[in-house]
Each structure stands twice: as C-alpha cells, then as structure tokens.
Image 1: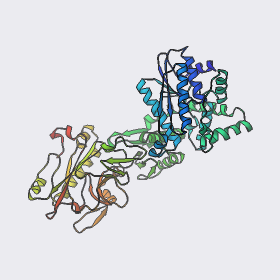
Image 2: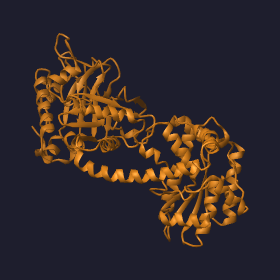
Image 3: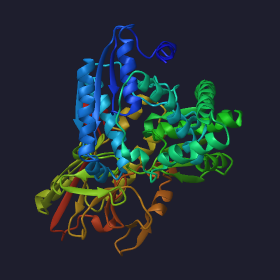
Length: 538
C-alpha cells in the first residue's frame, strides 16, 4: 500500500519537495492511516507536516478522549499538532445548520485558517474509496448533474486526498499489519444520518447481492466522469467567450446572447446556463435540473418574460438576450453588517436588524451606507430662512419648493435615462456620480422608514387630492426598463413610497407652508467626493 500511496502523491503532484502540509486527523482509521503514510513519505520527500484535530464538543468525554489519542499519537511520531475545540451545537443553532453540516464547516474553516497562518501549501484529508462511492450514490439519489456524479476530487485547490483510491478494508488491513490502533466514532454507526444508511446498509447490500467490487467500480466510474467534466469545462469555456457577457454598469448581471447560444449543442447550452447562474450566485445552492429546464424555455419565450430562481436570482428575456441577476438589494450591505452571517441573509443598521423583505431601517438622524450608496438624514424645523435655503441651487442638484418639485424630478429622471443609454464609460462615470438632495415632510410619516426595493402593493400619492398610482404604473409611465426596476431603491413607509430615489417623491411628502418638521435626505454615490465640481451635470 505504501508504494501505491507514493504513486498517487506523485501522479497528482499532491506534495512537492519543500512544501508545508496540514493533515486533518480525527483519530479514526482513515486519518491515522493517512498520518502514518505521510510520516513515511517524509523519508522520501522533504516536506514539513503538521496535524490539526478539531474537537466538536458533541460526544462529551468520548470526544475529549479522541483529542487526547491524537495528541499522544503525534507525540510518539514527533509531529507538531494543534487541537481546536469547537462548540458545534451552538454553531449549528446560530447558523441554522445540522450538527453534521456545522461540524464540517468548522473543520474546513479551521484547516484553512491554520494553513494560512503556517503558510502551508496543502491540506491533506482522509477520504477513501468507500467515501467516494457513498458520495456518488447520494448525489445520484438527489438528482445531481454530471459534476456531482464525479464525486470527490483527488485535488481541489489546497485540498489533497491521497487515500481516495484505497478501500476502507485496505486501510484497516494496513493498520493491523503495522500494529496501529484507532478510534471509532459511535455516531458513524447511527443510521439516522443519510450517509450512514448508505455506508451501513445500501452499499454492503450491493456488494453482497450485486458485485463484491461495487464500491470500487462506482469510485472508478466517478474518476472517468471527472475526466468527462474536465473536457466539458474546456468546451464550455470556449462557448462562454461567444455567448456570455457581464454587465459591469448594472452590477453583477450576466447576459446570455441568444443568437450564438442557440447554435451550441444542448449539453453545452446547459453548461452555459449553469455558468451564468454561478457567476451571479457562487455555489448554486438549491439550483437543480428543473430550473435549468425553465431557463431553456425562457430562451424561446417572448420578450419581457421572466422567472425567479432560488437564492434571489431572476432571469429576464430582453430582445436577443437573457439577463440573469440578483433581485433587489441583496447584494448591498450596510457597513455595520459586513460581518453578519450570510445564512441569515440580513442587513443591520445600528441596533436595528431587518430582513430583506422589510428592507433596512433608516436612521433618523444618521447615515446609512449600502455598498457605494449612502443616505444621510437630518431633522430640521420649517422656518422662513429654511425656505430660502431650499430655493438656493446646489452644484449637483436643486433645492426645491413644492411648486417646482415635479420639474426637478423629471430633470433627474432624464439624467438617469442618459446614464442608461450612454455608451461611453467616461460619461457613465460622470453621470453615475450624481448627488441628489431632497427635502421630505416628516409630519406625514406614521411608521418607521425603510430603504428597500419594490414589492407588490407599493403606491405613490400623485396629486393634491390624494389620488394614488401603483408604483409599477409609475415605472411604466417613466419608461423605466423592467431590468432596472428591481434595482431602484425606495424610501418606504409601509406600502406608501415616499421617495423613488433618483426620481420623484410622493405628493404628501412635499414641504408645505404649514409643515412643522422636515426630514432632509441626501444620497451620494462613491465617486461624488472624487470628481471636480465641473464634472457634475447641471
């Protein structure tokens, strides 16, 4: 086994002379075998080796005994080690994961952090041939695509899996021959976990009743499928250069050009759709074959048709393209929420935390920052002197009374329209740096204010008599493209839209003679402070 192990290391160039390797060792048979063979490999190839053991806090004293076993093993083999204790139950609760998922996430996070700290080039883990077969069967049962059927890769970035081509029986036979002991995690014998049922029931039954080499054959098939996937990736890469464009001007949107897309083979078209979604939402969590079929049908539909995918992804048919992008403001984040958990998909502003559906609480007074966008609020009393200040022109926008508010919003809309139509990057840079300041009536605000994007039921008050208009109808009147509407930020009081930011305000939000208190809102983009005065449009 030693010679075959060395051959795998060499064939896949897993470890080069002089490199540093982190080995994840749990104390089980697989990881003890991995560590022993790596120690023997050091006699052939000079490299540094360090062990990391993660104690999950799940099995009480038994788990602590595992950690002590690994420490003793490393001591006897003269290998540096690091034992890290993690409260997986608490992590599981906080992140909304199962214990199994939370434990895995914690392990790999600690492996990566240790590798970075020690400047290690490789992280060795002990997946074996049976793990490969179990993974493929599980992915097959879940309806995975070709990549999932390829199972676990021998090399994946820093991760290396030198035991992937050895069966569990071979590993235990090697340990017994070497007189080595190991620890057994009793949770591996509990059939409540899906993978354990495959390991303890399904795969043994296949080996008993179908073929004794079932696990090996499944793992070998996975290896062949990995090679097929590599070839497919190369073909897709070439096709993507012809069929996929990114839209930097509109954020992370991806455009699929339907004319060249339609000329590709069906399998390549499917891979292109996967790639486009991956560009918008790395990981493609919850995206399955049914969604790819829906996207394929969208390419054959009329212009204006659209569909929503898991993870906040939307796809729209526009002319001869399909545009794929994240809906709403899910790609933005307030400065106070940069470290928030992505599992919760929340935004924070001070002590207020609201979900995406509710939007982000607006601090009054204060400043809300969302990516390159900032909105500052200030409460002021309505005085005769303030009216003069409102009428005074600013370099970038106008301070307006209620009589001229409508004209200014039309002007602002025309500027943004120019921005969308402009083909010159320099002009886009100047126009996208527009700074707009408006004065809002604070008297009419009944609920706490939110910054969000549109949702059903939104409306504006459009005249002094209290007449209302649906927000979507306003967008249609302004000829705002569908693809832009979900990206326009709104200042909302419930379903009442006080300010379509960059466009108009609600009639009831206008400053009047009898207004007692005024909410002044100022928004800026990132480039505003950097451009000279003459660069601003007037």
